[in-house]
Length: 329
Image 1 (cartoon, one colour):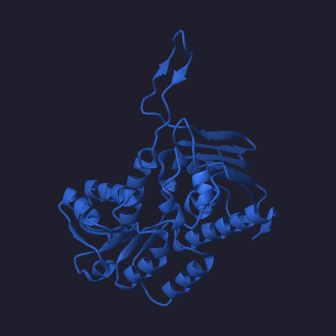
Image 2: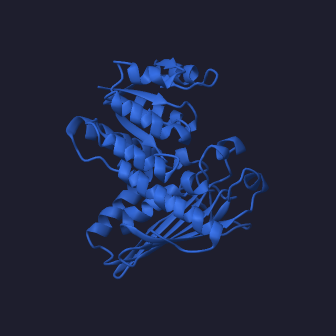
Image 3: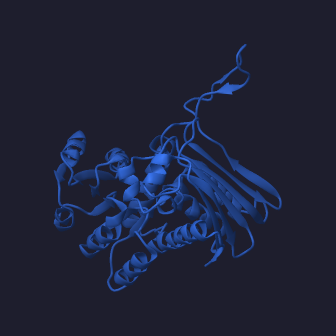
């Protein structure tokens, strides 16, 4: 039984805690968060212990693995400390707050042997997205030409969260950048357009919407259309278009009900309204892959290198949006 600690008792810490507690090969033993009674309250829900200082997690001999859901500015620090303590690590994105910090982390990790380290791009483990990858590799749609990603949130996070997130390209669309690499391979250039549509987000110094175009080294193109606000819910759609066909992943609703009446034709329920609900299966599958890497020695993916590659795209997108120029990687 893998004994797991979670750092961060916010919304992402809660979803990881639930996944760990319900997994037959894992048990939640410790929750860490310095703010108020957050760690204590979350830990009590699962019969786990709690603490406020992350150093206690790394020093605890009863912890085999650590899930890092702390604020983005602490990810690299916490990841390195956990690895040095001999703990396996599942770290939320971004792997670091900057490319420079991410590359230093890679260099530091290369200096010693450590247990598996996985970066939390959970969408790779979504059943539909994972199957699309398998079909693509099997040649079901021929040569990949285009990837179209729509990524819209129901509403923006608090300004306090935005201020420490690293910006929308490192916080929100970094998932889409990883998917672009997941399907297309390495990226050659990035062109981004940012929009300031929500005053509260603009005041926090960030974009609230926009479009990013990624050109792959093999000639395929990914477009990412993103927005911090979508009136119909959590809008998550992807299309892979190839020389011999297409793959399409649509939004999910609570049920498959369609209503026909005098006031509407073919009306469906709103999209699922939270990423934790939409990607619940992905988080469970991600944890299983992490545990398999620890117990069975299966390859770790996504890796720290994948996390840094996504950061490179994110910083290029920020530069492109600011300057209006295409950035070549």
